Image 1 (cartoon, rainbow, N blue to C red):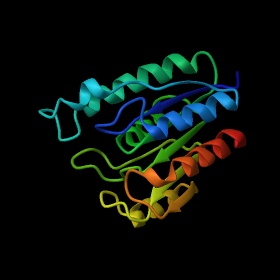
Image 2 (tube, rainbow, N blue to C red):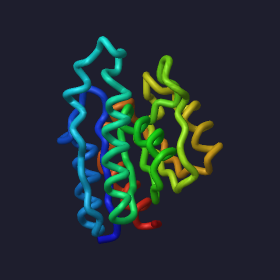
Image 3 (cartoon, helix red, strand yellow):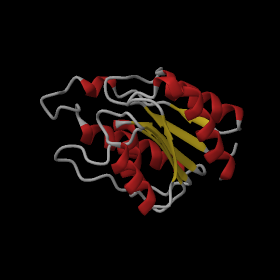
Image 4 (cartoon, rainbow, N blue to C red):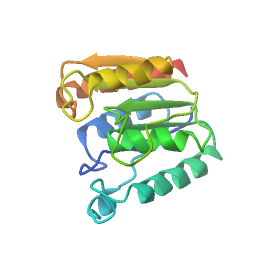
Length: 174
């Protein structure tokens, strides 16, 4: 085993979503164990915020990452809100790397996206109507992150395979 990957789906998505499923297949093929936490029970709690219970997501992921880190290297990956919580958890748990898909740099009253100084790889759509590509470019540049911009929107639905290849490149570089 090379390490463990925790793959977090986006808001109103699920652990069987196409992107996190593709990442799980990559992790397995490259000798990493993996898990896909289910946050769907929290997405319905809109009384907390328009994005469900973000704090509960953070706590759930942080606990899983801390537990996994006691057994070896950990990589977090996430899409949209899953990317945001993965980056935030990287500040509290020692990681080997981060893979972020369509990361929200600014999310309402929540803190601006921040991440630990670990290898970061990002895939983002030029036509993302929720998160302007320019903000992601600026954020990635400030961290020397690997950034792949694609001709797609927020869901990156036409670039599932490109996401998987970028994730494989990150894992391979670790």
